[in-house]
Amino acid sequence: MKLGFSAEDEAFRAECAGWLQAQMAGPFADIRGIPNLCDEIPRRKEWEQQLAAHRWSCIGWPAAWGGRDATLAQQVIFAEEYARAGAPNRINHIGVELAGPTILAFGSDEQKARYLPGIAAGTQIWCQGYSEPGAGSDLANVKTKAVVEGGDWVVNGQKVWTSLAHYSDMIFVVARTEEGSKGPKGLSFLLMDMDQPGIDVRPIRQMNGEAEFNEGFPRWVSRCSFATSWTR
Image: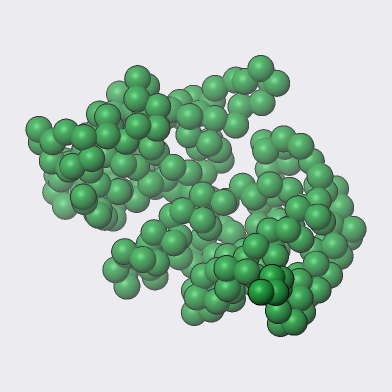
C-alpha cells in the first residue's frame, strides 16, 4: 500500500502555499507569526476578509456557500501550509468550523441564507455559549434556560470561558428549553445577536495579561431575534 497525497492534492498544496506565502510576505507581513489571539484584531478581521475574497476562508464548505468543496485531504494540506506560512490564528474559527457546518447540516434554507454569507465573507465573527460556572463544558449540566415569548426565545442564564466574545457579532447558545429536563435532553442550539440589550460581556484577564476568554451575561435576559433551535 502506498500512502501519500495524489498529484491533484500536491497541485492544490502548491496553489495554497504560494498564495499564503505571498500574503504573509506582502500585505499581511505585519501579522505574520503574532503569538497572542487578541493582538491586532482589526488587522485580523481584514485577514479574515482577505481569505474570504480568495475563497480560502471555508474551503470545506460547498462552493455555493463560499467554499471550495475541498476534500478532507485538501483541508489537511491547507492547515499544514497555513501553519508553515506563519499565518495568524483564525479569529472566526468558531463561525467557520462550528456554527457554519452546523447550519449547513441542520439549518433551514432561510437560516442558511441569513447566516452563512457573513461567516464565509469574514464579516460576521462568532463565539460559542457552551461552558457555564459550576459545569465547565459539561453540557449535560447546562442551567441556562430559554422560553418563547412573542415568537422570540428569551434566554436567562450565564456562560463562561467564551472565547473572543468581546469581538464577536453572533453567538450560538446551548440552553435548556424543556421545563424539568435533565442531562442531555431538552437542550436547544440558539443563534443570537451579541449586540442587543441584556447581554453583558466581561473579559477574564489571564496570567499573560491577555483576555481571550470572557464571562458572559451574568443574569441576562436577551432575545434571539430569529427563533432558531435544534432540540435533542
